[in-house]
Image 1: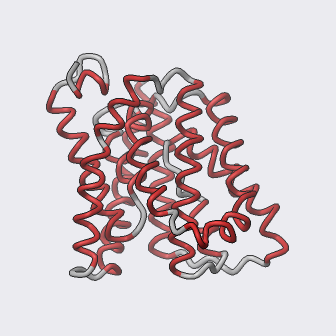
Image 2: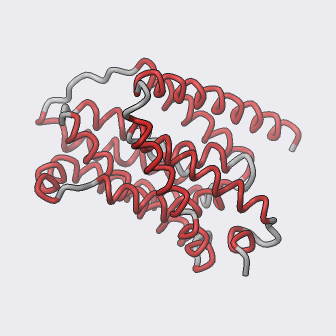
Length: 261
């Protein structure tokens, strides 16, 4: 069975090549700015395949790259204790959303994805979250995690509102990178469980997702090499602006499809 057949019945080699190119690009983005692999992957893959199939392809590359980002072990425990409530909420929200909403499908999934992309880009361009008092981290983290889980179930993207919340915890540069790696790893596992509950993540989907790991890792390596040669600020500005435009396109495309259905 070819990689294209693993991705979806009747898929062409061109589709497999396009998906690999998407993960290569997404890996480059993650290598340069430290995040963006699931976001850019879902945004571009949703243009060429169903959102549920795109989300299934995302699982292995996202999990492996984020587990790598969740190191080192020496600082894992203290950070985990601060964000454990958020992770519990994310798991509960994702599984509840998978049960309630079903697998991401149809024109409204595209609209939801577009809205999530625009919100993510707006945060990246203009957001500056305030500090969160330590006494409120437990309840607020649980609520933010649950909201992130619902967004994950609907769109396959798990950065909103998780990343602005993590930024507001004032963990420091290295702590923020590690916290995002931990959070994204948990959300990826929850997404996989939700897709499995909906029958969208079986052995074939797992095999196809594993195939996408190589271009994602190659892209990450290239992105880390480029990080020292580009201005991360300029790159992030262009990246967020591009995501906003892509999100707006997804919204209008989805609304147009809904009006004709």
